[in-house]
Amino acid sequence: MTDVLADLYPAHLQVQKERTDRALAESRFDHLVVFAGTPRYQFLDDMAYPFKVNPHFKTWVPVVDNPNCWLVYTPGEAPRLVYWQPVDYWHKPAGAPSGFWTSHFDVRVIASENDAKQHFPTSGRTALVGETTESFGFDLNPEELLNALHFERARKTDYELECLRRANARAVRGHRAAERAFRNGASEYEIHLDYLRAADHTEDELPYGNIIAVNENASVLHYYLHGRQRLDPHRRHSFLIDAGASWNGYASDVTRTYSANESDEFHDLIAAMDEAQQAICDEVKPGVAYPDLHLAAHQRVANILARFDFVSLDPQAIVEKRISSTFLPHGVGHFLGLQVHDVGGFMADRSGKTIEKPEGHPYLRLTRTIEPRQVFTIEPGFYFIEPLLAELQKSDNAQYVNWPKVDAFRKFGGIRIEDDLAVTETGYENLTRNAFANA
Ligand SMILES: [Mn+2]
Image 1 (spheres, rainbow, N blue to C red):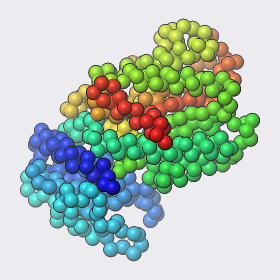
Image 2: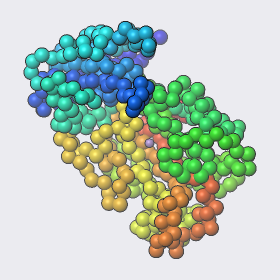
Image 3: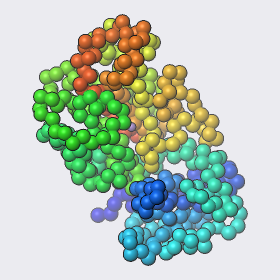
Image 4: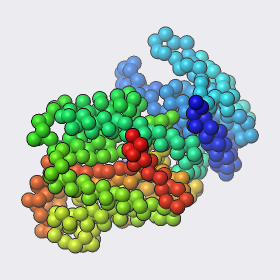
C-alpha cells in the first residue's frame, strides 16, 4: 500500500517553493541555504543535548534526526539536500536518504562537516537560515525573509494536515494508555512510561515534555516532574495529562483531565469545562479574531464560577473584576505545526507588523484573524493555583469568593482540555476529537 503522504508531498513541496520564491524576491535574495543544526554539548562534557532540528529545514524534508545537513535552494532549480553521513564508529551514522521525498532532491552526501560548503551557491545574494556561528559570507537569518516565511507557515498544506492528523492519532494512543494506568493506580512516572510505549516514542522524540499530574500537581501549569509515588484509591482524586506526539516533524498537543471518582463534584466540573471547550471550538471559523475566543473562554469560566458557587457575582462582573484570570491564567491556545508553539501568532501581515494582545491578557500567544488551513489549539483551563489564590485572597475581590468551597477543590489541582483544530472554509476539523473517536 502506498502512503497517502507520498501522494500529498509533491504539492507540499511546490507550495514551499512558491512561498520561498516570493519571500526571496521580496527581500532581494537569489538563494536560500538552511542549516539543519548541530548537536550542542553540555558544559565541560562530551555529552550532547538531544538534537532538535531547525523547523526551516524540516518544512522541506522530513529528516528530523540527522544533524549537519543543509538545504540549498535556488528558484527554478531542484532543491539540493546536503546530507551528512560520516564515517563514525562511535555513533551510528544516518542511513542513506530514503522515502517518498528523496526523488525531489538533488542529494549530495558529505562525510565531513567541512565538505558542505562545496555545495553552496557561489554567486548572487544568499540568505542563510539556521543556528550557526559561521555565516560563509551569507546574510544570516534576515528578518524580512523570516517574517514572510513565518507568516505563511500558518497556512498548512494537505500534506501537513495529514501529518498533524497522524500526530494526533499517535498521541491519543498514548492518552488511552495513560488513563488506563492512572485508573490502575500507577505513579506519574509509570503513567509516563505507559504513554511513551503506547505512542511508540522515546522521550527525546516527544514534541514537548509530558505533563503527567496527579491531584494538586495539576495546578502547576508546566509540571515536568514524574513522581514515583503510587497513591491508594482514596487518595487519588484527579489526573491531568498534557502530552503530544510527532509525525514527520509535526507536533500534536493534547490535554485531558480525569476525575478518579465519578460521584464527586469535580467530575461535574470537568463535564462543564468539556462542554465549554467544545462551545468555544464551535465558534471557530474563518474571519473570527482569535482573541475573541480567548475572551469567550473567560466568559465561560466565569459562568462556571458562578454556577458552581465558587464566586457570588454574576458572570459579567466576574470577568470585569478579572476574577476569572485567577482560575484561567493562560492563553486559550496557540498555533501548532512544525513547532508546538508555532511561530507567527502575532503577525498582522508578512512584513512582521504585530497585532496587540487584548489588555489584561499578557499570556495569549495568538492574536491573528482565523483563516482556512490554520492549525491551533483550543485549551481553556480552570485551576486552583496556590500563589494566584493567595493573591486573590489579599485583594478586594476576596469578599466575593466562597473560600470553603475553593479550599475543598485544591486537592484536585485543576482542569485543562486541549484539542488541535484545523480551520476549514466554513468551520473546523477537530483533529484530536476525531482521533479519540477513531481510536
Ligand atoms: Mn498547548
